[in-house]
Image 1: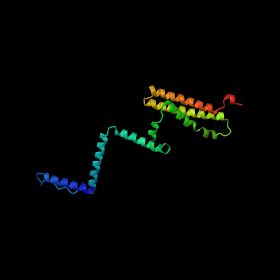
Image 2: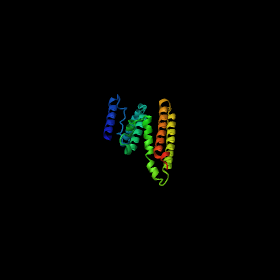
Image 3: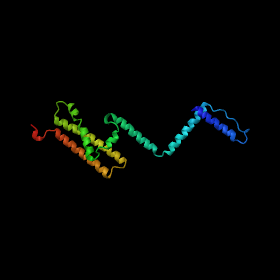
Image 4: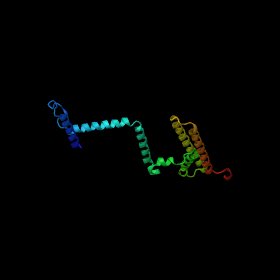
Length: 188
């Protein structure tokens, strides 16, 4: 590449001399050194980069978004496979579907929770577990609402869907607790 740049510069110098009316006034320029060629190439690269940056408009935001999505997909790949975000978008995101996933995932830890409390009253374990899960649900919904408020999108259908999802999660946790505790007629 340096040889072709040097040849191009030499040809340009020769053209300058040839095109000049008075060749006596034109000084012969010394052949460019490797360092000057490299500096000139670097300058051309910087100028081209600047032009691309200026002409790209909102492309940096698109690049940021695409890069973030790619990294999130990479992080989720071991657990959820390729294109985890795209796959999540195709799932049921209705209040019922979302609430069902929240309840199923959170109550899925019950057996491990109960095993850590051998010999304790099963009703108390279920009540304690449900209380812990409800605390997490409360905090999660509060943070989600705060984020949606800050984005100024927590209104209308979105707000009603969040509220409905919350209610369905609470009902799901009530049903879970009822299934894990003894009914009064079953008590001895």
